Every structure is written in structure tokens, then in C-alpha cells.
Image (cartoon, rainbow over all chains, first blue to last red; front, side, top):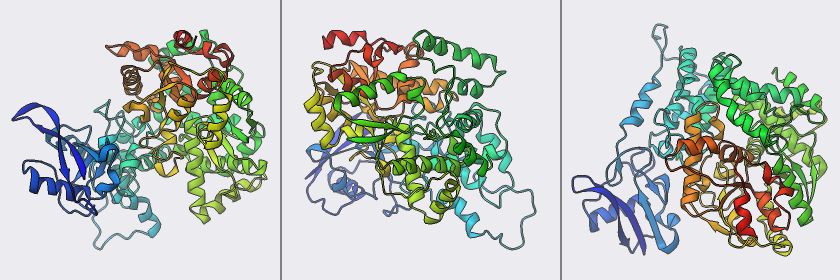
Length: 313
Length: 291
């Protein structure tokens, strides 16, 4: 016997959401989606959720189970059972619930639209197909597997506090075009993606990789865009300056010089940015917590420098 | 127990009290650490933004040094831990890539073999049966009455495939340690979330909001202090707490401890010996509970 504790919401009847419990007896070999269907068909026809393909292809049935986003059709209910034989189900996070487990995907799709999710090229359309080598295709293969289920968007730690962030799914989609050999707008794309709300606002929490039901794994794709942005010389922003300063610091001493990196990240001529660093800097200084002024190199730093040289850095 | 200690950069810089308390914990427990003085920075997932092969080469070099020492590698930073595990995974899963990395390392006299040494966070070492037994035997001052909220740090949990915790969505390793030290663990939702530190230079408000939400969650759950295994989380939650406090209507003020500080307190060391007077948020309010 499994108890499904489901967050119910119907604004036409009650303003606040509430939890309702349903119990199913025979759940062996059933997916979570099978169980939702059982509940809807046999216990309460008004239960609302999205579904279609039942085989992890359409991306419709993502919900939060025990606090984390998953595709309901991809997990056996028995694998999700927590204490007291219960599974807690809620709508995806970072989106407004419409009814029960169905949420409003409009902001999600608006952000996907923002990254121009189509090939852009000033060249004349080819008469025949454009060929890609296996190596060229490999660069965009992982992002191409995204099924737009919204699981990554739901659990993204940045979106919980900042609606302006494009979010993992849109950025993974962006990588699919940034690194597509047929696209002609790489520079324009990475310039746009380097603005506030773009790639450099990703906080490395890894939730998107963890929740992604496919190999799309957005955080890894975001990092690929960062590398392209730096290669393309799009460096007039704190994120890019931080990456360059960090890499330079390790080259010169083998370790991080925490006194220099904040200054180089905000930029030497950014008066407001430098001023913003003062309170925390002074606070740490007064406590004797500031990093040593004389930054010490690691032993055998020459070998680290040699590795940089060998890799043309 | 003897390990190669990968200190990471921040324990030698802005959180020297982490290094101090790690060595005190080791002393009190009889663990021998051999510091890896020629190991480079792990790159914190930032060097790989510039050049992924460079980051992997530097970290494979670090792991190779532990292999040469014949000692399992211990980290004291969640970020270092996750990043070294990522390199291990990249290199071990692709023989051609491993050869490429080793070609880069060759001239420096290092070669990454793989599979020879374990890469573990200090919390993972303490969480083994041997570690927990050692703790149990050595606790001199049980932290009775202290309600402690673990803050794990993203990189020791995600991706879960590289995590050493059994259930990275619901880890219990740090809380098990708290219990043996006599403290009372507080379970709260934010304990596995991000502290916001990686974007503190790019999106300060979002970064402080993330940290603030976690701190308020811990406070509302009744915690006396937050305990973290990551010095970057410590900086975000402690050094920037005055800004976070101002941003939140409810305000927030709670001491943030490094895990080795909590361990060493229970081993009988004084807060001053563990550099707790260096924290931005005073830890003196804990003295009353521990008296």
C-alpha cells in the first residue's frame, strides 16, 4: 500500500493549495504516472496533471516527487517511496500552478524563444542538405536530447530568487545553436548570452544536471557556452573577467590570489563595483581574516606554468 | 589513519581558521595528514570555463601526486572535492583523453594512473565506521544542547553519481557526525542548496538571496549555528551575512562554523585555538550553550 500525498489546487474553489492523500494497493511494477492514472480513473476524476507519451519522450509529465523534479513516467513508484510508504507530489517549482500538478509554462517558453532557438545564417540556403562531421555533431548532440520537460527549470536555485535568469533549459538550447557548425551568428549569440540573466548568472549548483532525464545536462552546456564566449573575446563582464583572472592567478602561483580576483572581476575602472567590495574587504581586514598580502606560490609552480604553456594558455 | 591533505586555496587564504581547525582535529583524533604542497588549485569549476583540458590536466596532476605518495587524498572543501572527482571521472571514462592528459603531464614527471587512491572529503572520512568509532572514543566535551544545521555544499552532492553520500538528495553523513559529537542535528530543506557564492561577483543580489533563504530556513528550524564543509559556503554565509541581514525584512544572524571547528570543539579545544574569533559573525553566543 502506497500513500500519495498530492498538493491540490483549484483557484475556482479554494484560494490556497492543500494536500490530499490517496492510497493504492497494487503498485508493483507501476510507474508514478501509472499510479496517477489509477488515482484519476478510480478515485478522483478531477485530479489534474499533464501526460502524453508514457515513455520519457514527450516531456509532459514532470512533477516534483519528494521535493525534486522527475518525469512521472520514468520512475517506478516503489523506487520513490519514503518513510511511512508515502510519496509526496507537488507541481514543478519556479512556475505558477494552474490546477493541481499542472503549471503555467509560459515564462519557460518565453525564455526559450529569447535565445533564438533556430539556425541563423546570412548565407543563401543550400540547395542540398548541409553535411556535418561526426565531431561537429557531437558538440550539439547532448543538448539536442532536451525534451523541454521543465525539470531543470523547476529545481534551479537561481530561478528561485531571480526571474530574470534565462534558466538551464533555454541556455542548453542556446548551446545547441552556439556550437552548431551551420550557424552563422555565434558571436552575436554569445554576446547576448553574456548579458545579465545569461550564462554567467549560473551558480554551479548542479540541480539541473541532477534532474535532467536526458543527457542534455544543462550546466555542462552552459559551461561550453562560457568557453566559446571567452574564445570569441566577449570578456567585458564580471563573469568573463572572473574566469580570466582566476585562470591567470593559478598560472602565476599555482593557487588562487583572493585579494586580486574580486578587483579584477569587477574591473579596475568600475568605481561603483570596487566601492561595493569595500565593506566586506574592510570587515575581513579588521578581523584579521583577509588573505595574506604576500601571496605564496605552491611548491613546483614551474610545472604548473609548463602545463599552461603546453596548452597555449 | 594517514592521508594526503589537499588543502585547497581558501583554507590558506580567507578561511585560515579552517586549516587551523583541520590540523587540530587531526591532532586530537590521531589522524596523520601529509600536506600536498606541490598540488595546484583545483580550478573551482572556473578554470574549466576557460579551458576544460587545462583544468583536468592540473587536477590529474594533483591526483597523480597522491598516487606517488601512496596515500588516499582528503579534501576540506566541498568544491575541491567535487571538482577533483569530476576530473577523475572525465579521465577514467575515456582512455584516449587519459592518454592526452598524461602526455601533458609527462615532462613534469607525473603520470595519472587512476583507481589507485580514493578522493574523499574530510566529512566522508569521519563518516566511515572507522572515523565514527575514532570520534566516539575521542570526544572529551560533548556538545550537548547545541542545535546544529548542516550545510553540505553543492559539489559534494551533485552530480549524485560522483557523490560519496548514499542518498545525495537526503544526505545524513554530517548529521551522523553531529550526533556523535553530542550535538542535536536540525534537518531543514535548504541544507542541500546552493549558498550563492559562485555568482557573488556577477549577480550579488541573487547570491545574497540564496544565502539568506538558507540562513532563515536554518534559524526558523531552531538551529543555534550552521556547520559547513565548504569554505566558499562559509564566506557566503558568514563574511557577507551583514549584507544578507540588511536585505531581509526579518533579518538574520547566526554563527557559521566549519565542520572541523565543531569536531575540534568536542575534542576539547577552545574556540580561540580554532580561530573562531576570526569569524565575521561572532560565535560567542555558543559559549553559553557549551558552558
